[in-house]
Length: 442
Ligand code: FCB
Image (cartoon, rainbow, N blue to C red; front, side, top):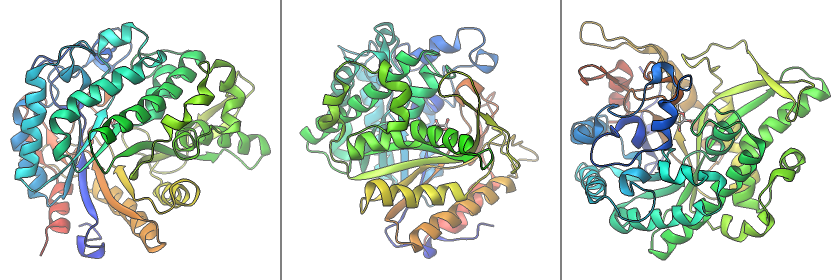
């Protein structure tokens, strides 16, 4: 049982669930172009078992059935992403009509079920021809991305409830270019500094493009991890502050304050693209809302290695199947801090929150009481933030379906609905049934 129902929330508070294109659609279908995730996954050592998104959940052919599940659970909204390479197989130039038609049908299928379509324009599958040109390292990506935005939103923008250009700038910049854990798998500080800045430049250009199309309710989606110092030494406090700086503050600061945090620039400034200081007028394009993706915290200890001179250590809290500590307080901290320091009265949304578990199908059902507990503890923080007056307008659960969890392949099951990756059968888990009870309007 969940400890809440929608009656505990304001009438216009939105409950939703979230997915992304490459993780569920089946990228081999419908004339989509090759992406850097296809080539990253095809390179030994990058992805568990070399798995990729070629078939994924075959949502491309099953989206009607999947949206029936979203609607039947009582959700108000559905957050999805459009694939750049499905719309523009070469990243630029001629659109793939089949891809545009797909997103058109998908949009209408949501509206027919009374679901609010909440789109993200980039959830990580960069067209390979653009990766060849340097991808996020190349300043031109801002223009390429704006052109793609115009093509896809020119087709479906009239029916979107909300749109955000880029999912999780930290993952696009740091995780993919510094840690090398996501495509394109680089570990280079100059590439990182360029990508972190260009991702915000592209965000700003896309917002301007959509304003030009007359669109409203545009926002940004930022992932956040709470940083806890390993001990109370000054060195550990500084290490955690730096982690907090490049993970959590950097992007919010760029978009809402037109500046990057000093503590981060101490390491990144020498590697920034020329003229970065002049781009904030575009990066600061006004937004209508801000989305926060939240899963966990990290415990940070200093070391005497190269900048950023710190590392993560294991923590004492119960962990999910991702080995992520369950730390609901971090969500409350971010909601209150974001409103207090960056966004003020601007509506906030939790755009992703959820957990992975090795869920198994037995006798036709999937029991996931751990997920019910996780949702309960995090929704309690949502309620606490609301009670404090944070202008929070909605909460989206990651994810509707078990899906392709990037470098970790298909084992890390985040879904409310179990997917058998042989038969592609969908089986709602007990968390899905509990949500249905909590969300159905009475
Ligand atoms: C987020 C991503 C999403 C999924 C979850 C677990 O960082 O946006 O695609 O991988 O983590």
